[in-house]
Image 1 (cartoon, rainbow, N blue to C red):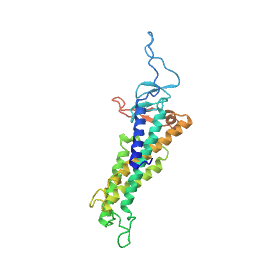
Image 2: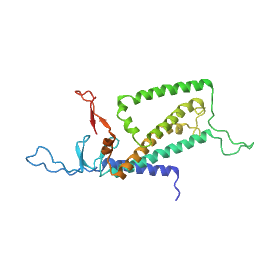
Image 3: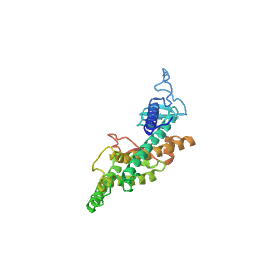
Image 4: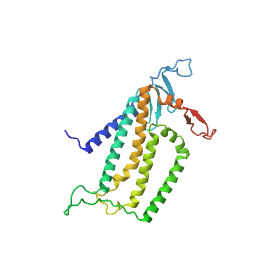
Length: 263
C-alpha cells in the first residue's frame, strides 16, 4: 500500500500528539501517598532513588527535570515517552522544512518541461536586483538583527539561551538559522514572489521554513542530548550540576530576583 505525503504527515503528527499526551499524563514516578504517622509533622522520604521536584513539590523516582512544555515532571515513569516525543517532533519539523524548501526551490528553478520552442519554462519567481531593493533589504536585516540581540540579552532569555546553547550542535544550528533568517528577509524584497499570488505561486511555504527550522534544530539537539543521557545513565539534573549551571531563582520581593540557586 502506497502512502502519500499527506498521509505520512498525519501519521507522524498523530504519533507525536500521542507521545505528548502520554508524557504529560503518565505518572513520572511519584510514589503512592503514605499515611502520615500520628507523631510526624511531615511525610517520610520515599528513598534515595527519589528526588524532590521544586516546581511541583513532590518526590519523583529518577527525577530528571520539570518540563513546562508538557506540564509534568520527567522521571523514570515517563522519560521514555518524553524522549520519543522529542524525536518524533524533530522528525515532524524536519519534514515540514524539507517539503517547504522543495516547494521554494521549484518556484525559483526553471520548469522541467519544454515549451513550444523547445526551451524550459521560466521560473515562477524572478530576482529583481535593483540597488534600492538591496539597500532596503540590508537596512531591514540590520534592524531585525539589533532587535534580536536586544531580545537575547533581555531578562526573559537570560536563563533560556545558555541552556539552548548547551545542546549538541547548537553552534552549527545557530549559524544555519542565521543564514535562513537572512534569506527569509532578502528574498521577499529582491524577488517578485508577491506579484500575482495564486495557488501555484503561493509564498506560504517560504515563510514556514525559518520558524520550523528553528524548532527542528532545537528539538534535534534536545533529542541527541537526552539520548546521550539515557545511554550514560544520567539525569538532566545531574548533568547540569556537572556543567556548573546555576539556575536563576524566581524573582521575589526580598531578593529582587538577583539570587541564584543550584539546580
